[in-house]
Length: 254
Image (cartoon, rainbow, N blue to C red; front, side):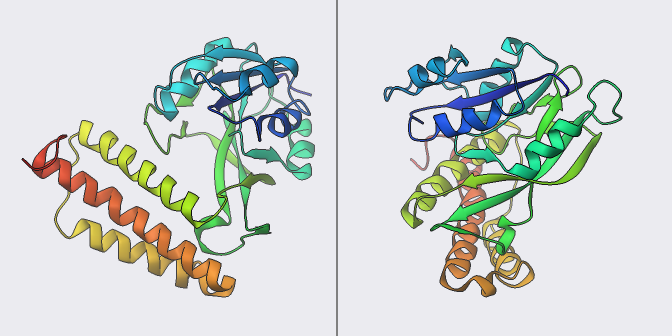
């Protein structure tokens, strides 16, 4: 089996980190945890389990993960979020990979997003392809604060899964969409991306129609409708907040 380093970034993930690391140690003999100065014992649990813990004030999702790459012992890196686990089919698939003689620099998995105790198979939540296993000598994370991706043009989708224990409830989803939309606006304002007054509405409406109709959110009942609506709100506010920065600057209207 190829030598793989695991990578996780954390902040107050004591409830999740043990199961996450147990999953990584199924295929990794080296795991790095980049912890943003947790106060709930996350770092201590990770050390007890054999992870190399690096304490680093939060830099944004992409930069935080990139900060952990030099600490990894192996070129091949498997990155999970603390609320994610490898499914049995992913463990089996990874064990069959040949990192030395393979033709790809990165591999993607399908993500099973769980909500209210159920696997949500509709909306944009499935199949939710995520690129998580990569050769750090040939690929790295983008430097975005939010929705960072492993940057490479040479990847392969595997027919195997990562399990994601996503949001606790609708309130948690609202909190996260507010956080992510602000980070999106910050990233794109820094790159001087321009949007029109119609952009928030157009993107929000398209997101709802895509999730509820094209991605068949209507098949998932009330959760499907609410997830579609909240995804639409998240898309709307990404562009609304960017438009606000474009018009009024970082401090808002005078």
